Amino acid sequence: MADSDRPDPADEVRDAVERSRSGAPAAGAVVRDRFSADEVFQRVVAAADEEITSGNRELFFSALAAGFAITITFLLYSTMTAATNEHPVLSALLYPLGFIYIIIGGYQLYTENTLPPVALTLERLTSIPELFRHWLIVLTGNFTGGAIGAAVLTWGGVFGPEATTAAVHHAEHGLETSFGSLFFKAAFAGLIVAGVVWIVYASRDTISRLVVVYMAFLAIPLGDLFHVVVSFTEMVFMVFRGELALVVGLTEFVLPVLLGNTIGGIALVTVVNYFQTTDRRIEAVRFEGTDRQLTLREWAFGGLVGRSYIPPVDTTEGVVDDDSYRIVVPIANPRTETAIVELACALASHKENATVHTVHIIQTPEHGSQEYGGTQRRRVVNRSENLMENVHETVESHDVACETSTVVSKRSFEEIFTIARRENADLVLMEGEDNQLWNAARAERPMSELTRGLPCDFLVLKDRGRDASRILLPTAGGPDSDLSAEVASTLQRTVGSEVTLLHVVDDEEGREEGEQFLTDWAVEHDLQDAELVVETGNVERAIGRAAEDHTMILIGATERGLISRLVTGSLHLDVLYEVDCSVLLAERPGVRSFLKRLFG
Image 1 (tube, rainbow, N blue to C red):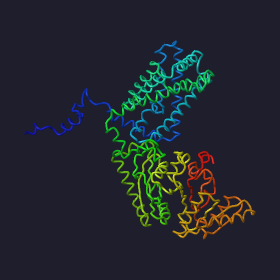
Image 2 (image 1 turned 30 degrees about the vertical axis):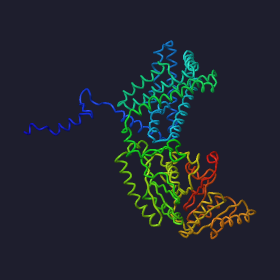
Image 3 (image 1 turned 180 degrees about the vertical axis):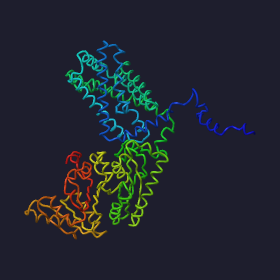
Image 4 (image 1 turned 90 degrees about the vertical axis):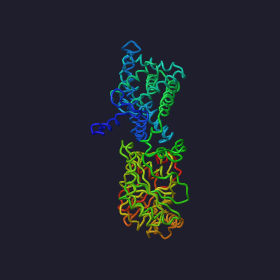
């Protein structure tokens, strides 16, 4: 064949590129200029991944802004109704404006959240309880914003007399509609809103999104449909005017609209869109297959039986159910946190069948979870495993079983509690001085510790010298001091620590009783060789004086518990910030109620 007759390789490549999978040419009128259903679903789930990991504060205030934006819709709808003499079309022309602000601006609207978080839940990447938590925060924020807006419209002189009459008429129309009609009208509105979300993620430019949002939300007033946040704002407006009882408005107006919007958004859109996609719909989000999925029990019950959310990368094994004594050591930097691993090995060395599981927890950037897929996931895991080689060597040199894993998550602090429960850990040991995980704790403000209690014993080291040769253990009794005593006794046997027990009484009259208490307590906790010191007066000053001659303080939690105090940046005993020696804070799972843990 002559060279001129041979096809140009560049032409062959170009021809291959310009053809779709079905063989249709990709150039010209049939060019594929839209996302497939699978691709749209992946975009929805990636966005939901961002939303479900948002902090409660960010989620609430975004929802609050959306609720207040809905006030604009209520304001303009009522004003236009009065200005156009209740013309059915002209009065609704500006109705979509509040929704445009919300969706284009990226605020959190409850009816919009019937699609992305539900898609994430259907894929078993987050649990049903986590979905309900997300909904509750968003709905609370929406209602709060709507109520604030209704208050301004009621007492701020924004409405004229005609607009006020129109606003009251809109609310009365909803109250006069039967429960069943409200439900089904709201179901169609839920269908519209969730459908808008799907189309917005399928759109490639802002103008297309703007047109879709405007046309879709214009259909709500034109179709005589109901949106729950708008209905709530109308209802509260009537309540503030003294023309409606709150309970009546909630049960006879808001409740059926809420149920209709929810079921319409879920059943008519999310489920339908889910089952029209293929098994490839989630490849980019599963990160190497179905291993990034909750078990059925976790999916149904969330953190009560394991975990509520699957982070982008989690190389820890499933639930551990053995008889070994397990110490979980969460670290943020394997290069600099070797001291905490050494301490874990010392504590594990005197236990039979003990395992030290070191978890490298990497916190993702705010909008980066979807970047951890495929090759990127493997790269992160491989780099983490290389960094953890020194940890392996450290643990194995103490003749203790070693396990390591990597977790990449936005909820870096909450992952500690999740891993501890899944591992059936006996002890969690971690650093707390300028540690990235504690900084994340203050940002996340996790409520799991406050509401469900600790999953196991916790030790938090504020390292100021890595020296456990002379240990000071202040005690007044209690389970947290019991844990401190166990640690002190172990370090006494393994590294030869000298232990001083300190008990503080109010005055000299209580000294004899205090000495007897401390003697008995030392015998009970296998610390009879320890030096016993009884001081009078102020507890903090006594600890400060005694700390001058010691290298480490072992102290139990006070009042609310050390975890909640560390998260809020308050240790209760200010002297613990002032001493020069290391501080090892201990807390044992207790039976304190939620209110006691929260308020002391």
